[in-house]
Image (tube, rainbow, N blue to C red):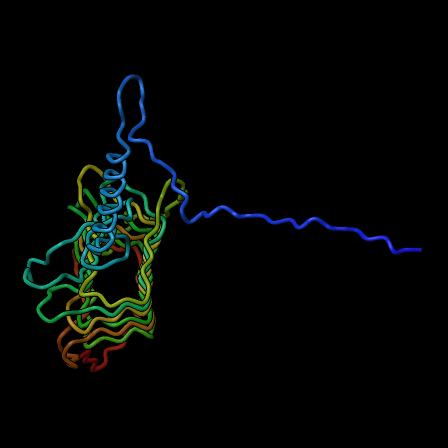
Length: 284
C-alpha cells in the first residue's frame, strides 16, 4: 500500500511598512461657518504652559501662618510681607498678628521659639487699642521662658499666680487691688480659630488689636519655652482672667536692686500670689 502524500500550501504574509505611514492633518475645523485653526490652538497651549513655567520658576510662594517677616489679619492665616521700621534695609523676621475688634480666637500658642535682635525695643508685645478696646484673654500661661525684662501696664487681671520657680533680677509688683476686676471666662469656641507656632527663630512676636469698636476675645494664650536674648516682653491694654507664671526667668543686668520685672499700678487685680525670687539673672 502506497503512502499518501499531503502538500501543505506555502503561506506568506507581507506586513505593511508602518514607518512610512502618514496621517494627513486637517488645516482647520469648521464651527458655525468659522474656521478654527489648529495652529492657533497649539500656540494658546504653548503660551499656557510657558506662563505656568514662569510662575513656578519665579519661586513665588503663598505666605501662611506662622511664616516670619509677615503680618496676618485674624481670623485669616494668609499673610503679607512687612518691613520693620527699625531695620528697613533688612529682611524682616517679625511674626505679627493683627486682630480686629470682636474677633474670637480659641488658642494662641508659641512653643520652642527663639526671639531677639539687637536694637529692638520689644521682643514680645501684646497690645489692645485703648482702655475701652482691650485684648481679653481667659487664661495666659508663661512657662519655661526667658526675657531680659517684663512689663505689664494699663489692664485688668483677676488672678495672678507667680510660683517660686519664677526668678527675676529685681521685681516690682505694685498693682491696684480692685474687687471689681472681672474673672474672665471664655465660653464657646464655635466659629473661632487658632494660631499655633512651634520650633522657630523669630526677631519678635507682636499680637496687636487692629480696629476699635469692641474687645478681642482669646480663650488661651500660651508661651512655652519662649526665650529672648534682647528686647522686652511688653503688655498693654488687656483684660485677663488668670495669669500663670512658672519656671520663668527675667533679668538683663544681674542686679536685684533695680527691677527688671514690673506689674505697674495701672494694672487692676483681684488677688495675687507673688512667689517671685529675686536673683542675679543676666540673660545674654
